[in-house]
Image 1 (cartoon, rainbow, N blue to C red):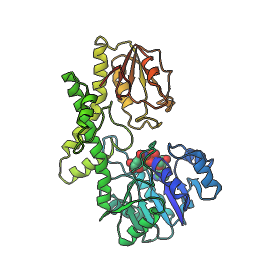
Image 2 (cartoon, rainbow, N blue to C red):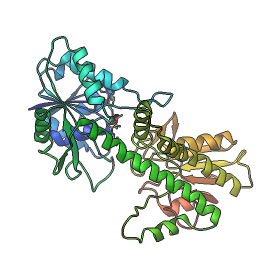
Image 3 (cartoon, helix red, strand yellow):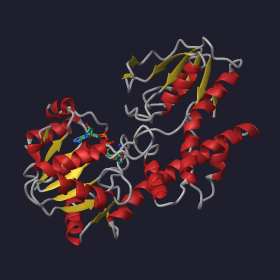
Length: 401
Ligand SMILES: NC(=O)c1ccc[n+]([C@@H]2O[C@H](COP(=O)([O-])OP(=O)(O)OC[C@H]3O[C@@H](n4cnc5c(N)ncnc54)[C@H](O)[C@@H]3O)[C@@H](O)[C@H]2O)c1
């Protein structure tokens, strides 16, 4: 079987690496630089090693392309393109539309189309299927299914094999073929009754994280005002063996999922006349954490940051990855600069970002730790500035949430 994967980013390349062990995979990406690198066996994604790609290329089971006609004869297509928000924070299905166009214009025979991109309930049925049909020159009856991706880049304990996978087809035949495909490399498949349930479950999973993170971020502010340690209090609550799940405070949420997916759920809720006030407020609380952090740093430093040198340590949105999408570090830096601080940042995993490069760890008056990679030593962070504010809870004996 030949599989086309549309989008060779975090999700698309991860699925490519697993599927490539069993099927021939053509990875279609419209970024020619990424395609060129991938065909040299160079991965740009944590969790997909160069040697995995090189092994697949050598055995003739993988190649990347930005030429739509290269997917003309596949038997199955997986869609893994970004589903971001527009500038006014509404679901943006522009990349999805382009992916449907590639599929519609190039595929000659009926195939199974599986969407792995995250989107609101109804996307497969009311958007993807009609869009592919609109772009197809002839009438082709493809099968359609959804299987939302749950990959957590950089995570070692859970991967495609041992993370249960939800799926549902638009028809029973689509469901059956979807099960056949994933069962080759995934231990546990969970079929749900409709694509809408699978789509909604994915959004709810990330909304659950978003609201719990917002709750703990708000609680961190309450704990500080009460003069107690948020971390000690959370550890104490966590001794309850049931009914509690520990989340930890931070400078905010980042990445492609938690800041974005709940807004997809809120948007569809509001379209149906249900005000998603709780979800909207959770998003605001998380966005406001960067200001709270900078307020605390300012108040500890004589009430002004004007002209002070501040080093932000860790700008990736989470430890041990180079991903800076929606990172809380961006807002922290914005607030610091707006108050006249002279800001540089240290993150050798990210290297370059926004036209700036990582500075050495040290030499500033103030250090604010947003993300702590394992490669950064606690002692070096402590020694990096006379005043250190840690938002991660990982550096002992310094200021923090
Ligand atoms: N990153 C994660 O951890 C994660 C986890 C679960 C679900 N998701 C979801 O998966 C989807 C993809 O996310 P991602 O993190 O892989 O994004 P990404 O930005 O890492 O990768 C997307 C890739 O698609 C390519 N692309 C964009 N438009 C294209 C098109 N029309 N045709 C072909 N290629 C195109 C881009 O060049 C890029 O390489 C999103 O819906 C996201 O919400 C992401």
